[in-house]
Image (tube, rainbow, N blue to C red; front, side, top):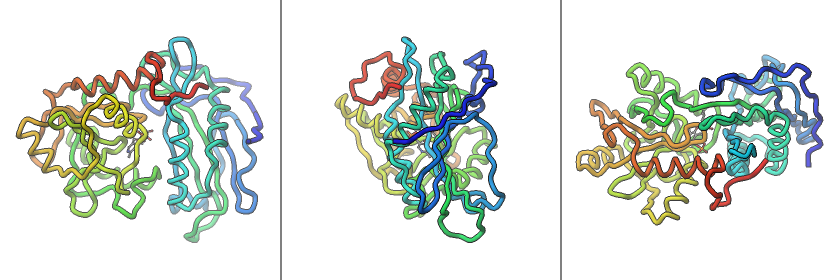
Length: 355
Ligand code: PLP
Ligand code: COI
């Protein structure tokens, strides 16, 4: 149990006036949670303080060698005004999986959950009211020792910041156009692809930049060895409906084990759909498309929710999925997931945790 010190702001900021214009990750709430770690002392000095700049030595290890991990989760407001989280313990368990890979000390899940609840309780008025908007929560850990040698740090900060946000893609639930990257790769097996660490996203920027130049909003990554097998998209996992079967790449170390991915697979199995997690080549997708069997394609993620894919470009070939419109199954999954998250549907899966 953490002993959290509160230092609350005396100058709260004005809340966003028009929640439909929030965008993603641009506005921050009044407070943040911070806790420090030092080898020999453990995690200590848990505090909730006004949101603001933090002071770091320019020699801080994270700034040079990227020893950093993060999570992404949301708090939703229900019609009754309750505030709820979606499977938050899964995020903190995954934070510890990332921590192990980056040699960052473990953060007990119950302490992280306590910090989360305490911070959101303080800033609960920042949870948006609009449908489709929510409070995006970004917990992260950074190595802060002032030292230029390469080794795991002895000093860390765990911070949680809150950002009232709308849709991640400006298109909202309208389908996104995705570009299959055949030159750059994001991660390889044995690397850090299964973790949420800044380096994976830094590795994705050149491909994303190329995609944007071609008017595509995101990159679909292929495996780092043969560049044949589908991995995931920049900020979401990917699913295909081929011949009435939900197919998604298996978890083999280079892709993020998404919590939305896992939840969607559990839902589809519960609905009696055929589901398979396996290796899928981009050639197989192209062949299924030519045979008229590629019914729907969508991404899954906390920020992205369920994002239908309208066009998929591989080399010179542009595949238009379901006439460029959201498919029936994608829509049903979207309605069910967001229905539970916003409290419009009963929590039959036991995924909701109230503030
Ligand atoms: N893949 C990547 C690279 C991501 O950044 C995310 C977002 O967190 C996901 C997949 C989806 O994961 P989750 O559903 O846990 O948000
Ligand atoms: C999330 O969905 O929470 C993510 O972390 C994606 C992010 C890179 C915007």
